Image (tube, rainbow, N blue to C red; front, side, top):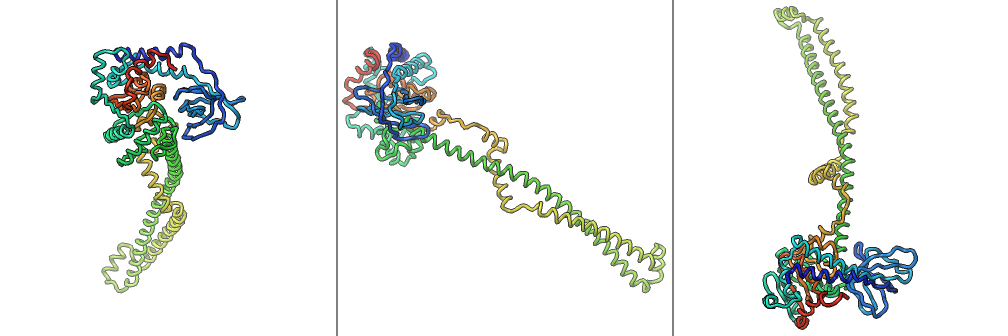
Length: 484
């Protein structure tokens, strides 16, 4: 069976569950306790009646008593009588019992929609590596399929089978280190959230031993069920926690930029005013200098006249006659002196006016040294950001939590196949490599749905003992039995 036909067959079988109008009855839950909170997500544990089974990643609605608003979430784990649910809104745990409404048909409908979309629009996905899985999942046995399974370990499809989980995980750790060193984007999946947490903790410790920054490379898409694994706190690797911390830092940077811009806007008119006053001051000082230069010139002329008058009688007769011919004698020299003194008095009045203006302008034009340095630093910062227009645009832009862009910056994303196939976010994201641990325990439709997001290589691993009968079990998944 070709890959599009296989996808269509899986999608049809999954959709039948939704078409059968099967619905889960509300379940009374009590003893609700808040386990952890990460960003906008909350993790709650609650007790439910024994004897019921809830699938992981199934959407649920928690209805509190009274008129309180219901809250949506997803089941992360169900063991015995305890269910762990991840919610977006906080629950009021002190108001009594809550009703838990499980929407299993919606879960299978989302998975069927994803597989149908992959079958209808294969060009929008990366189905090359997924095609290598078709011989394993094909319900119609054939010689070609058996031959393909026999030579499964290739550059595109690699298998890691071993009964010893430690040996298997050690091999996966080596492969992960090599992939991340080559800057590959890896999607890590396991059948259960508990399995994802444990493997992620092991890989985090492996990366730490390899001197790689595992906290920035790894991301756990859902909240972790376990608090830590292999001595590594898993909350620090949570996608929501990482994103919340990133945007909190972004908001702090934005607030700091807002303060810097406000201070720059505050200092700009002040320094512009002082700059204008400084130009006025320089102009008045230049005028004062010119007036004083004229006064000095007139004082020099008066000194020359005084020297001539003192030596007038000792001058030769021919020189005195020449001066008299030019209208200069003892009487006129005194008149010239008085005229120069009058000009000096007028100039000194102007000098006094200019000096008074200088005294008034000097404090207005003075710029404190610290203010100048602060303004220059702010100006350089804003210039580096592209100028005030660019800064205004940055501050005016609304803070959009772009989950897709954020998750695409992570090198390894860990999740369960059910979450990957049913979450719309993963429909728009592509990865280079898939690592599927305990692959024989992953339902065939979900394994194939996850593989459709991979561009280069698929690595499937599992217990050798689980491998016996795996092909038969995968063939029967959603083809010979109803989903349950």
